Image 1: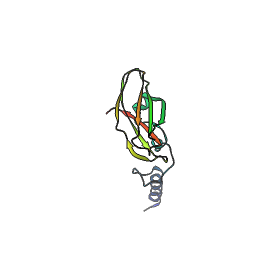
Image 2: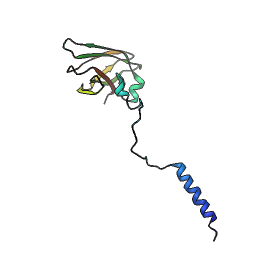
Image 3: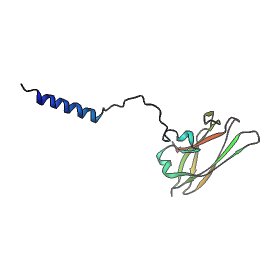
Image 4: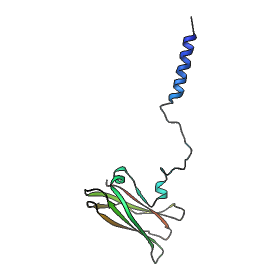
Length: 140
């Protein structure tokens, strides 16, 4: 019996298997420094889902320190669509290093008329907040 064709076939099959990879994902992975997964930690205004990324923009952020040391933020949120939109907005207040202070506002519903801009105001509950992230998502 001639085993040469079988050996060649086995080598070719093993090579194809190595080149094609496995169906399951290997893991765990080491951390990578990308903005894809850190955008909520580095940006002041974040759109949480695809529909809001297409329809909503922020035309301005104003922040000020109140007399008692707390931070107040006003976000101008604009509807870029020619139809009425309903979104939810909240604010996560963070310390100087960007970690949450535990002061996160509940999501509030915001109804935006066609191509309109609305101002939304957030105030920190304590003086630990130095940074913030305003988050917008589709209404649920």
